[in-house]
Amino acid sequence: MKETYSLAEAAEYLNTSTATVEEIVDTGLLSAGKIGKALVFHIDDLRAFLRAEIERQTAERREYARKIAAGEMPRDARPAVQTANGAAKSRYGRRGRLPDLGAAA
Image (cartoon, rainbow, N blue to C red):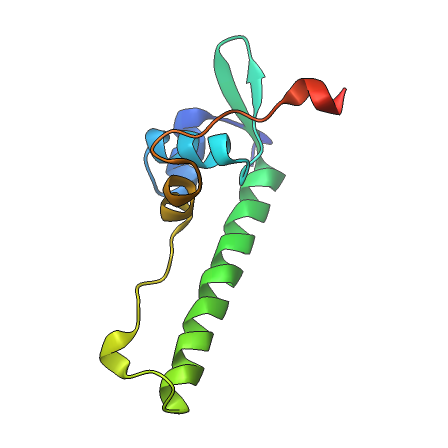
């Protein structure tokens, strides 16, 4: 398996659109480097993001199930699980702002 992915390849790996990947990168939830005009992703960063997102969504579903079982929440009141794309939009709007990389230097 190759170590670096283009934006299109990263979107395919995450099974989403390139626009969604760009939004997630803009929020800082997923690391990417810019080489020339192209975003480049390392496979370890894609895997870490995917693993963290799966764990977060699973924990959210478990919490809803616990509340339903304890009678704290009716089954039909259960909200949908927040997706990474939804988190990106709610955090910064449609398109987020880029992180300040100059501060890290």
